[in-house]
Length: 235
Image 1: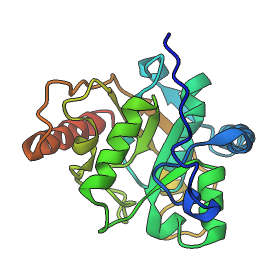
Image 2: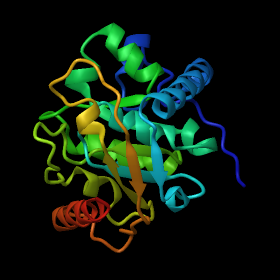
Image 3: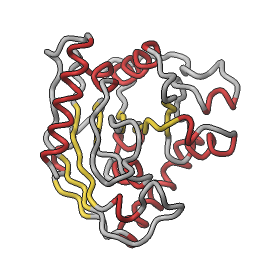
């Protein structure tokens, strides 16, 4: 393995700017906080929601890869992150709505330090932002947890996938792992402030390869359509 020493991507940013930056790296303190948080989340999901995981063997042995799933609840990102282990768990980032999780210093700190989220600003995400995600995913060997619907369902029904996922992986060897989470809408819908007990079942499908898909608008739409169909097939 070839090692390369380079400064952190976020080294020149102020503390607050670092929390909200797409270039944020975990750091030693963040790694300790997130390790403790993952342990708490796993216990919570096991005891409170009797989490069942099917198809864990489909997760790639090493990053980079992207996990995509239906989006019904704040439990979604917690559950997908909880099934990761080893290096994949340590380098996993959830892509979260900036207008929900990064509106204040307190919420930004929680989102960044506890759940290791990177902000996606709905209606303001640029091509440059998507290119940054694409570059970091491959160059830094990361895991992204992504919900291509763009928002939590208000009806319990899964929505259409947006093409942003395609801009991140089309023409790239990075695999995409489709997942379907059952029970999250019933346990914690978008209209509720707090979760309630309820069983969760996560089904993990075989990775998808988009290395031969054109990295253009048509390719992005094809990626979105294919991943949506793969997720729906797991229901």
